[in-house]
Picture 1: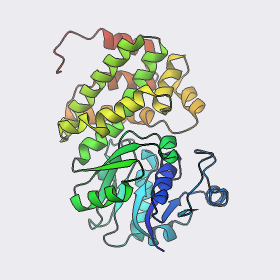
Picture 2: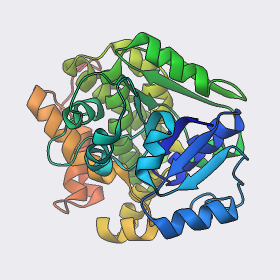
Picture 3: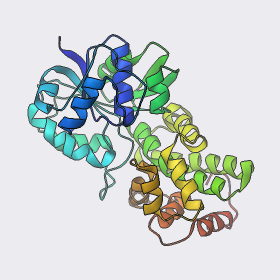
Picture 4: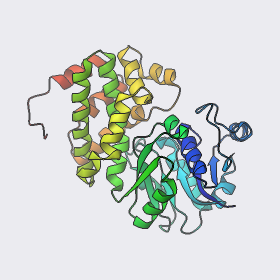
Length: 334
């Protein structure tokens, strides 16, 4: 039986999405690059590295044959780190059938160019006959894989495709909301990771609940300014892909980005913090790219700028907090 969706990327989030789809009753393929790792997953019926103790449903298969995966699936969902998105699209492009859609669950901007995911995908496809959607929202992989209630946004310029994908995910405690604001959903997903590092730093320095709340509110204002300048709808940032994902990532230690900030506040270098976490910290990679995009659009993003300096090793975390606290008085709307 042909798979409804194939998930490309067998990290924690990709695996959790595949588990949910299969649990919904959809035949689902989970693809990863390593033949050995995927063979172990298929045999053990779990991803012991990222989601131990959470068994695969019967309708989920794990494999490493990319051509078979693409051929045997109606649509594809890419859940790799954002830095691997372009190479993944290049690999699947010659294998795609006309009309086969791509859903992207990567939360970040392309390293070195600050291109958004939909731009990276468009550049990697030989033709425009493939509908594209972006999946984002407040989702910790473990909770999703456990079947705890979760809500996301599916954004696409193709309304029918967004509704189709939302329908496939919707159910069993999982709510999926179609949207047409691709830019807003993407910027919310990328920028919130940077802000979570800042909140982690503030909490790690013991600056208290007042600081945390203020930091989150000003972070929301910053990513909203950036998004609107890029062409997003402001109301998107008050929803799941904006405020929802921002609050989740900033306030719970399941967030790698928040933990990264906590470790920086302890005095670890960015390299040491990343090594301690042992998985991709998207915000650490995204900070420079969010700043690049903001500078390109002429948008003032003081929080992002200071976090980028910390990650680059130019200043200490306490210096970033001090600089932000001493900014000149101005209206809250700026």
